[in-house]
Structures are given as structure tokens and as C-alpha cells.
Amino acid sequence: IEPFIDNWDDFEKIEIEKDGDWYVKFMGFYKYASEKGNGKFLLQMPDFHTHIDLLRAIRGSENLCIDLVERPDFIKEKLEEIKDIFIHIYTEIYKLTDMEKYGTTCWVPLYSEKKYCTIQCDFIYMISPEMFRKFALTYIEYEAEFLDHSIFHLDGPGSLRHLEDLLSIKKINAIQWVQGAKSKPNFYWIDLYKKIIKSGKSIIVYPESFEEIKVFHKELGPKRVVYQPNWKIKNLKEAEEIRDYLKKIHNFIYLRHLFLLQFLQEDIADYKVYNIDLFFLIIQYVLLFQQFLLYLKQRFYQHFLQEIIYEQL
Image (cartoon, one colour):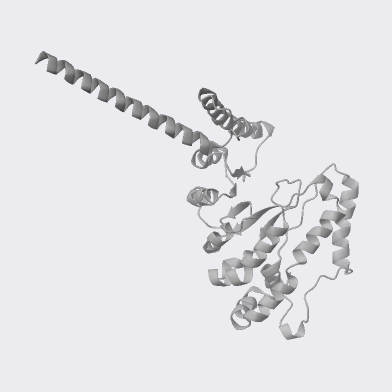
């Protein structure tokens, strides 16, 4: 989109012209595809760029940056004016294509039986944390509250200054980190991935090879990690090899955990046996208990030897 607002005073209201040619065609494509597919394939939600990204598209990045400084209250009014556009378009597509029956997906190709989408705001790369909280955070959280499942698209190192605020949004389930062109490679960001996982959110990782997957899996573990290979997988055999590797590692952890629960004779079948945190917590206590028994044993033999020595004397 080429920016077309040179002067806000010449532009009264931002709204969707639902009887306009492009909007009618846009929704018509969805309706046609839905009728032809009839549940045989999923339709994805479009690539939304709403709230402040929308203003950037129609006003231009440089002009909008100046507006945030010179007319902050006016921009806040405009953001309130357009905040429901995302919900209105999403809901119309959702109903038009019977997604309540078939489920939802989007350009980050995961699936949900309920309302799911990727939320993004690329303009935050250009603003401070204070401006982010005033002009973006509220509207990102508003969209996340509407959805049942959501991923935030975090694009570029300049956006990392807003990570703490983004992690505070409870309804965001995962972060899709894209380091950007000419940035440092995947391995450099492992600590970032760990931080996101530790916050209770999942991550989308884009490994460049099977070997990278092995390294990431060793560093990050199996929980809250989604791998989306960023290289051309040659054939089905290679894809199955990756799947079998991850399945083997996951099942190994599962079997060790299950054996331990049986060994302790704990009747907690309703508990998630995939909870690796519980597994390692139990292991830690078992090892501590073994160390305590060893200590008692050493003390016993020490006392026993002392008694023998006294008798000999």
C-alpha cells in the first residue's frame, strides 16, 4: 500500500468500505474457496496488519513517527477508531467459511479448533518502550483477548526492547521470532528462546538443517518448541527421519518418567506424564535421598570402627 494521507485534516474517518470492489472480491474469494473445498482443505486467515501498522500503511512511517511526537492524542483517537477492524474482518471470514465447524489456521501454519491467528505489529521496531505501551501494547492485547489462541510475530532485533511487555500478555500463546535479514544466525538466539520458554510461552523455531534441530532440541528440550524447517526438505524419507528422531527422543523421556512413577508406586495416572519438570524434580529428590542414605552409612561405619578401636585399646 502506498501512503495516501498527506494531511489528517483532509481525512475524516478510517473505515472499511464493505461495498467497495476490492472488499467484495476479497470476501468473494473466501466464499468461493469455502464452497469448492467443502471441508476438504483449510482456509487460512489473511496477513493482518491492524492498529498502528494500519496507520503506518496509510500515513507512511516517517510521517507517523512525527505524528506520535507532535499529535499523540490525535493518533490515540485514531487507534481507538480502528481497533475493531481486526475483529470485524476476522469474524466475517470465520462465519463466511464455516470455520466454527472446520477450525482455523493462518500464515504461521498451525491449527486450532477455535479462533487462532498470528498478531503482528512491525512498526514497533521504530518506537521506544514508552511509545509502545501507549500506542501498541493495548491494541495487541485487545486482539489477543478476542482470539482463543494466538502467536505474536516478533520481527528484528530492534523489536526485542518490547519483549518483556509482550510476554506479559497472558492470551499470547507463543512468540514467532524472526531475526531479520543480515542478522545473527539462529544459534545466537538460543538464550532468547530459553527466556521465552521460561516465561510460559511457546516458540516457533526456524532451523536451517536437521543438525540444527538436534542442537536446538538438546538446548531447549521438547516442551513449548515448534520447529518449522527453513530449508528445502528433499523428500518424504528426510521428513520421516526428522519426525522419527523427535519422536524417539520424546518417547525416551516419556518412558523414563513412566518407569520412575511405577517405581515409586504413585497413583497419579491423571497427571500429565509428559511434564518433564516433575520428572527432574523427582529425580533430584531421589538423588538427595540416596546421598542422605550414603551419609548415614558412612557415619555408621565410622562409629562401628571407633568402637572396635576402643575395644582393642
